[in-house]
Amino acid sequence: MFKGAVTMWLALHFWTWIILTVLVIVGLTRRSEKRITQFLLLARLAYLVMIISGVVLSIRTFGHAPLLISLKFVLGIATIALIEVSFGRKLERDTPHLIYWILGVVALITVGLGLTLAFH
Image 1 (tube, rainbow, N blue to C red):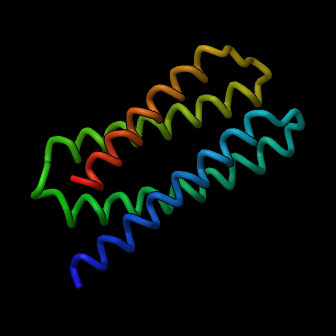
Image 2: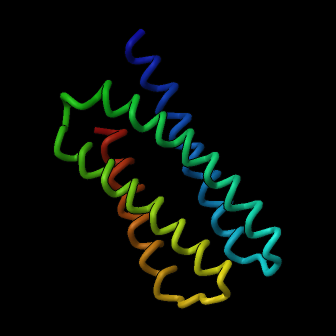
């Protein structure tokens, strides 16, 4: 039963990351402030699901690799912060592409670490 519950939370977490990635890419490529705000709100809803599933997964698997899980948690929060900054800059019409590159790199490292932990 424990293994099935972890698999369910892991699937929820994984699919939420995919949905969040699509929401962020589409939201940051919109030109209308109304559309950008709509995608920002949807992304925030995805954060909520992702944070809840991440906390559940962390609690259930912390004993296996506490350092990696802690690092993944910090990188996940950093990714969310960078997404918020990116949307904020987009809404201000100030869009330096450096923030997008930093967001992409941090997100890739976070996802890579998450996949490493999932198949560990």
